[in-house]
Length: 183
Image (cartoon, rainbow, N blue to C red; front, side, top):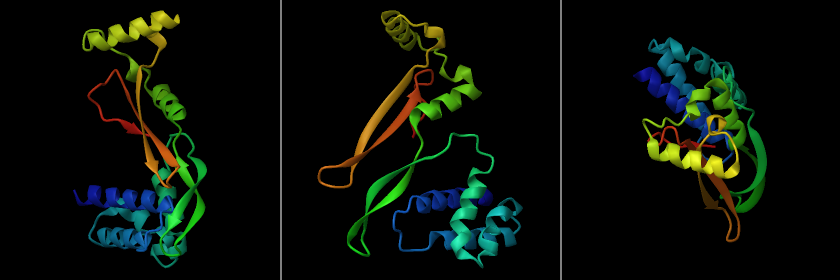
């Protein structure tokens, strides 16, 4: 339980800090201290995180080392960076910073290339969804056996009076009760 908690906290801090969102605390250093403490208590599974930044002696390398550990065995598509305006409350000014995104079409392709059945809509389990998919595919003249039925939800997060960042989440209609995947 402790190991899972520590790993989740490390991932949370890595991702939060990687987005350059001007947190005034030093979550990289806090994460490293948590990992070292857990490692000293016998949680060997966090050793690679505890070693980050030369065991905390090189704090400027913590974010890089954490991200390298988190993404080490990842087979997900490359992260796409796009410059967006951010507000820095310390300087009370707007700056442009690259922000990481996962592109939905690349994420869906990656997931389906590993498990093609992920998008298969069962007419036995979900007859309504299967009928809707079949009708839509017939209308467009495409084969519903090779079509991924995907539900998309978009929402805007305003960062100025006139502009917003659009966030997309999706789910496979073959699993209508599953959580949406944020991209």
